[in-house]
Image (cartoon, rainbow, N blue to C red; front, side, top):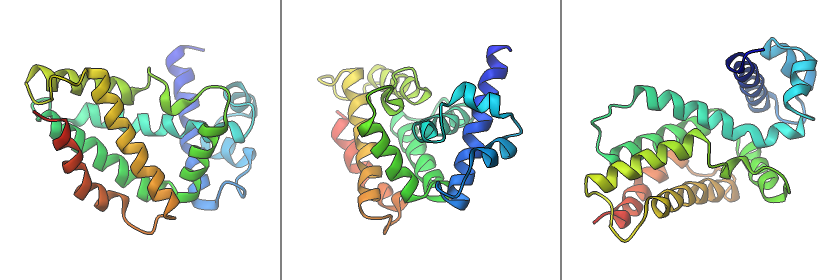
Length: 194
């Protein structure tokens, strides 16, 4: 099986699983449901995931699919701050509309407890490649402070977003993640600028 085809199969499994988790809940979704919804086989499922629990860390793949989509649609002439605002707003809208607070909480819990791979921190994710590109561009255009390296900028931004999502989970989603970020993100981004 070619690499692109394997990635598409895994992506279909992840996308189907998270849609089912959102619609029916994690506990009410079976591996058979996921296999049927993804139009794959149990063998394919077990090739990529040891169990349904192993899917909990895969939400970052779903986020990265969104970032890939945005990267393809994003105007390259947009100011770096507007690019960061766009990716933040689109992600948080997606989370509010397709990822329950319970599932996002389980993802954070899973990432905190795992001794293995921490998908949210994987440096090869589309998310970090996109952030690196924007941070480099922001430095070149003189938007960001000189005393902050590209890695400092990426880390600060990623921590800001994770902190917002974590707080949203702690608050049981009793406010709009998207709306609150619209208020707070400009203040945070301003602290990174010259």
